[in-house]
Amino acid sequence: MAINIRNISSGQPPTNDSVKSAANQQNRLENANVQRTQAEVSKQQPSTSDTVVLSKDSQSLQSVQKQLKEQPEIDDKRVREIKEALAQGKLKVDPERIAARMVDIERALS
Image 1 (cartoon, rainbow, N blue to C red):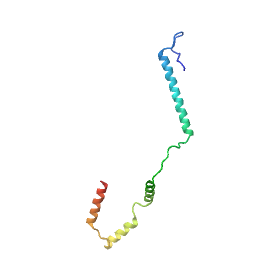
Image 2: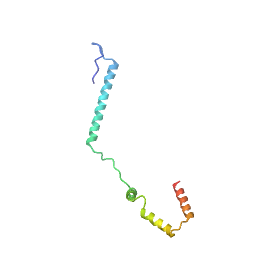
Image 3: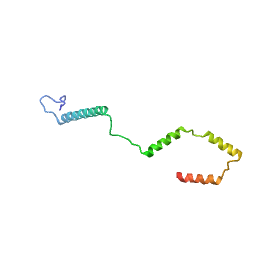
Image 4: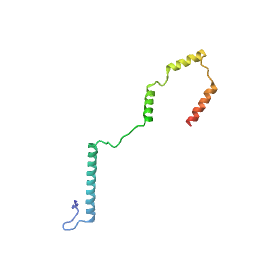
């Protein structure tokens, strides 16, 4: 252990403060060396302890999400078909059924 002798008069023993200061400085140096060594070791050794395994449900969900991303947000063909059916009177609108479905959706969301 090094002792700071700068403030010591010749012939006098070191004070408690100078001994504590030297001990603190030594501790800081040792801690810095330990941290540096740990950082070097972690760079050299790849982490093999952390692994993630997705469940089958999660894998299925990812597959469905990927398929949805590939689909257009609006199906132009389906929109055209509905417009034509409405214009030709082939599609009948049931307001009560629409209202009931809206209520069902609202209940499911709350």
